Length: 573
Ligand SMILES: *[C@@H]1O[C@H](CO)[C@@H](O)[C@H](O)[C@H]1NC(C)=O
Ligand SMILES: *[C@@H]1O[C@H](CO)[C@@H](O)[C@H](O)[C@H]1NC(C)=O
Ligand SMILES: *[C@@H]1O[C@H](CO)[C@@H](O)[C@H](O)[C@H]1NC(C)=O
Image 1: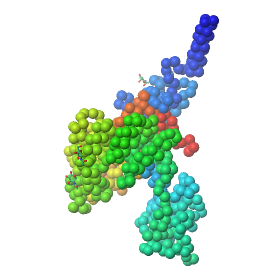
Image 2: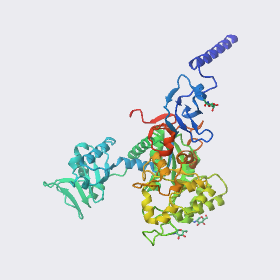
Image 3: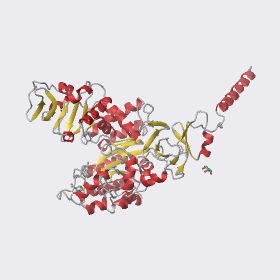
Image 4: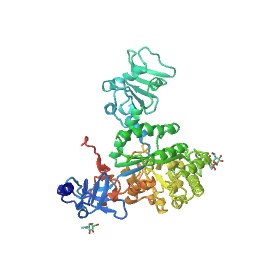
């Protein structure tokens, strides 16, 4: 009896080995078969041990092997999908080191009418906005300028038939008047019989019916009816923002929460629980996020990390905490050694008391959290480097990767301090497109030239740059950011601003990929196309690496996350 059992067991075993082998004739039993084999590409891996390759094998969402085709052929089996790229350039998925993801997604849903030059464009933009909205939810936007189409003021009747189920509010560019559609007027209780409020006008037709236009204090009648953003809207904002990121080749973002100061503390945590946890558990995450929380709440993050660990899933990583040293250049609140050229009494602001900042940083760091502090002015940057130095000496040596967010204006000796103290400058190249003229005005030409956006100086000082956009402050567009770091040509300029600070394409690419990954402790999983890492990569439209390295003019053709095509999505193509 026993012998039969044994014999049949052996037969079953041999049969199953034989069948497996038959199904995968190319496959040795010890070799994993690739799910996806990318071939005939120009791959920049970002991995110094093998910077360039033509093929890449992927299995279970991770990179199996990178190399030339002949070295990968043995990984091909029956189930392997092959992707021949005709020589196109492939780079690691971009990491945006500084975004406000949900705020960005919310703003996307608002109707941006600034570029609308005609009545038709105005109506067309509202029509487009309706498509992505559920019945009943508000459509809010602004920026219109009736002078662009000859002066005629818009009326509710322009948009009523395309917005029967959504109340609409669109403010004029100057913020002194706005247009409500008829549904919004009804919700706000604005009728034929209502009198104009003190300090405001309800614009009316010859029959005394409201046209939808409200001036000054009359606008409050509608504004009071627009609800706070709901959880559903914040969830939709995340999905919208994620799709947009993928369109631009971004596969991971470092999210700093809401970008409106004040309400941000609680909102960042509510976004974590209501939006991110929902998206993760309902399989709605599309990009990877590394979350930073307001530094005042550091102990809450420590508790969360103790219970959940740092890696919540393949989509959500808990990052660290963030605080503010100063304000912004635009509002003359960035902190400088010298006063503002256009405001000679003003040196800017210490946004957070330095003793409190030191205590919070020391406590967060002592609990193992990564710390990021916003500093724009030269003085603020030095003060934060001082804080970081004394915290490091108080708490002792460790790999802590302190970050300075923006590091925009630096005194000549400061880039070297970033290198020596191993501080990450988390910088936004795209800001220089808009900031150059304003920096020259506010700091004076000489000062602005010496200390603005010193990317090359920072790299030469052995600091590792992490690139980001600060979206929605600037667009989330790494290829634009890379090109800007290479060319430094501000809007409406012909020449580079501070050409000695231009970067090479490799330095700029690395700052948006592998260096950005190290800057948020994710380099074990992402940032380069190396065996074992997640298969996040971008296919560019160009098939000429040489042209790309000179011009950086190309666009994203496809974005893969975990080896799966995420952009363009299947229903788009
Ligand atoms: C392909 O790659 C392998 C391993 O890196 C190398 O040994 C081989 O010479 C390469 N072949 C060609 C044709 O480049
Ligand atoms: C900012 O703080 C530093 C250090 O405490 C102090 O020396 C400086 O005067 C403060 N600047 C302003 C504008 O408050
Ligand atoms: C910072 O911490 C020290 C030591 O715990 C304490 O004495 C001091 O009051 C704290 N300072 C502030 C501003 O919280």
